Length: 223
Image 1 (tube, rainbow, N blue to C red):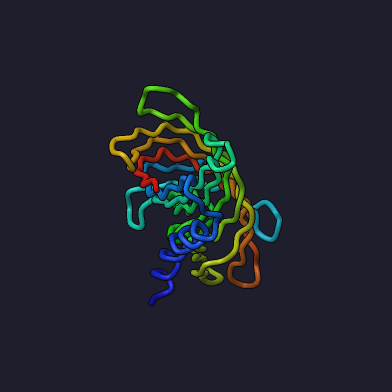
Image 2: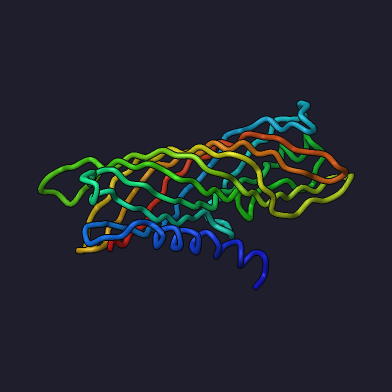
């Protein structure tokens, strides 16, 4: 199995394993979700060796391969008489490309995190109880880690590998619609903030804080 295939398959395996490890009983409600959508990122400051270097303008290109996508496992706490509270383990494949102005300004020929910033977060969710309707609004927030695929090409060398970047915060708000007994469709806004500190060529380090905005659509299976 290639490194890329293994990296893409690992988040779903982690979420499934995590869900099966959670306490189970007859009243527990679980859900597995997949989603994709539009994702973007505003400019961020790029520091080299903790010194100001330049400002990067980012393009999300969410529908360009590899696309923006994610998977999520959710455990609703109904067996603890808290049916509207939940815990989710969420992986999202966010990405950013440096725009042409950034490349011209920096003198770099290639600068991307496009095999993903790869975010894995643990979140608390709250769904609003609305009787006699199939619509359920929800909100959530959490924290986790980012594992970016660092792609930098400049005169001094090239970097092209996965690295541990640092911590990530996540917030989301959305609405789900139950269209079958065990199936929901949902629309949500999700924001993430990632502290990224990685190594590049020539023994240098690169630091930046990446904020992403995503409007996702997806489906969930409840069991």
